[in-house]
Structure formats: C-alpha cells, structure tokens
Image (cartoon, rainbow, N blue to C red):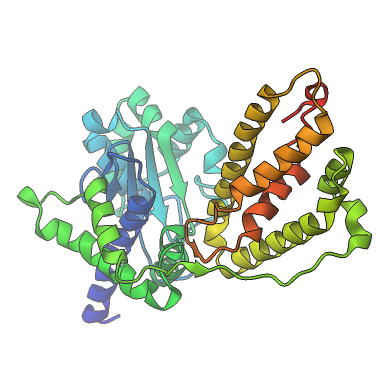
Length: 370
C-alpha cells in the first residue's frame, strides 16, 4: 500500500469515528453531551466506545490484537475517571477469531475474562500495553472487564454510512429519499465544525444544540405531508357476520346503520393500509389518532350514562350515544403528517375501536367493559 493510500485509510478511520458519534447523537437522551477523542473515541459520560475500522474484509480479532490491548491500557491510564463509567465498548469491524480469548466473551464473568487476559503471552506489538494490564490492581481489572463489551464484525464505513446512517429512522422518517445523503453530509459537517469552533479544542456535541441544527438543516429537505389516499372500497353485506361492530349495532336495535357503518369501517381500513404502505413512518401517528378517537368517545359515553334514569330505554339511548359519537369524531380529520383526510376515516376508526372492543356502545352498565 502506498503512503498516500495508507493516509487515506487512516483518515477514513477518523471519519468512521464521526459516523459512529453521529449515530449516538441520533439516539442520545435529553441533556446529554457526546465527546469525541476525549475519554474514549466516542463517549457520553457513561459509556466509552473505542472505534476501530479496517478496510480488510477478513480482519480477525486475535488474542494479541493491539486494538484490544491498547483500549484496555487507555482505560487503566484514566481509571480514576473511568471507574465511574457504566460500560466500555470496543466497536470494531474485525471479527472475533474462533478459539481466541474473545470467543463467547459476552457469556464470561469478570473472573473468567481476567484469567484469559492474564494468560496471554506478550509480544513486541503489545508488550507495553500488556505489562501495564498485568501489573494493574486485580480488583480494578475485574471491574473494567466486567463492563467491557466487544462489538465485533461491525459494518465498514461504506456500509455503515448507508445501512446505519442514511437509513436511520431519524432520517427516513422526515427526509425524502433523494435528499437523505445531502442532509446527512450537513450533519457530518456539523460534527466536524464542532471541533473547529470548540473552546480549548475539546470536541463535544451538545445534544440540545445538535437537535436545533438538525431541525434547521431538515427544513430544506423535509418530507411533505402525505395526501390522504381515498378508498373506493364498498361493503359486501353478506360478510357482515364477520364483524363485532355489526353485532354491537344489532344488539342495540340499530340495523339501519349497519350498511353505512360497514362502508366507513372498510374504507377507513383500506386508507390506513395505503397510508402505511406509502409511508410506514406514519404508523405511530395513526395509532395515536385511534387512541384519541377512543378517548373522545369514552368521555362522551360517561356523559350519556350520567343522563340515564330508571325509565330510560337503554337501546334507544345507546343509539343516540352512537350517533353523537359519530358526529363528534367526524370533524377530527387532522392527522399529523397527513392532509385532506376524508370524514369517513374518523368514523371508520371509531368503528375500529368498537371492533377491537375498546369501546362498548351499549350503555347497559351491567354489561359494561368500556
């Protein structure tokens, strides 16, 4: 390999580290800071990750691999700080070699890990690091190894860029496919600039600031709201025996509403299927919408039950409750991420709630569930 190629692979390793840090930024908790080249390659103050990248597809993590021993050495060097960490991770594109001390690493306790580590004969490559490890306090070494995780066979830079970052839910949920790479480049640029603009060259990413910039960059590329897909499905009355909501309407003597209700239910179900097929990221919004419909109708039900008297015709009052429920939800056509929702959708989702027994339209409190 030429010196220029060798330099390029080293630079790629640094870029890979930035990509791993970006993923951590996507998934970080509120109030977190992500540090690069400080207390590990990537750290959030509780977890320290050493990131090792190789362009070799068949790279193996062997007993005397410098990446492991140098990582352990660095933790020991800063143990007074690292002792309060919850986890140490070696993130490597190398694959654990069968028969090495790292095979089945996750199943070993700290004592077995220490025994294996201490048993490895040193060589010229790891001598400096292994000597430090073997001389370190036994209890301290056990504490470190107890928290030491190995994520081997991780995706290489090109794969990581596409599979992990470009296709991350934080990206695909709001950015149209043609613009995901340009958007991601903006975020990676933000990671780099954070070092350039840092105080005292301490490379840290404040998550609140990151999210503000994320939103700012995203405005250029955001996915437009999905236009509500209209359904032309019609009900086959011969199948009405398959639906619980039909029986519920029959039980309160409201056969007149069965045909229209079946149309609303089936159209809404068909539209929902089309929405999810077009944009799966809206699934949670649709679930939240169904929950809102349920809450509206259950609150309405309480007021209808409150108006019952000993002389009330329960079936007649239940029919009025059903009508009021349909009327009240029919205007609830605003769904986050969707435009031009048709009135049949909220009506159909009310019927869905009846179908899955989240709502009982019979006001007879003796048979009350919801």
